[in-house]
Length: 222
Image (cartoon, rainbow, N blue to C red; front, side, top):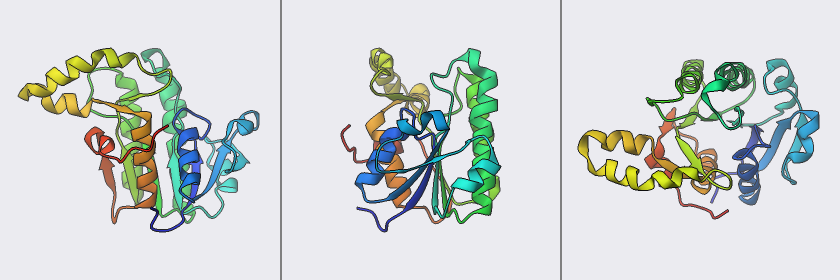
């Protein structure tokens, strides 16, 4: 149960993770305000306060963040791949920078960000953009929670299940164990639960949740 009703501002609320998180936060009794472009406002889950804005623009966000005490940053390029390297900087990184700028000027008490597990042997441009976003958040002075999944399993995102036996074997081999755990698979249900739990329980100072921590969340089914 929530230790208190949170007033949450969500960017990326129309996406794979954001739409589910909004539903869960509302179910737990929190107030949710979500920003989207005008063409996507109707894609936000019912029950949240939908506001029109540009998640890449600090000025736009400043006008719509309202009196939120928690900001959840989920904007990112859909279906990341190496060919989208420039978008990782112009969208993923830029949106975090915009949100941090606004959060520092507003009354945001807790900034929640979904990054990515690292170091990693692939998707170097994606990882680099997320690492720079983490560094900007840590140096901002904001209280933060950073979640570091690698691949999130869910509807339309299940192909890595075929790799499960390899992960299991890798965790049995000491030199590979840490990497297998850090780059392990998590479900969308685990991610949403971990995010909602993080919103409800701000840390006394910044914290990072890796794959084992995300998996440990008491999962709410979706």
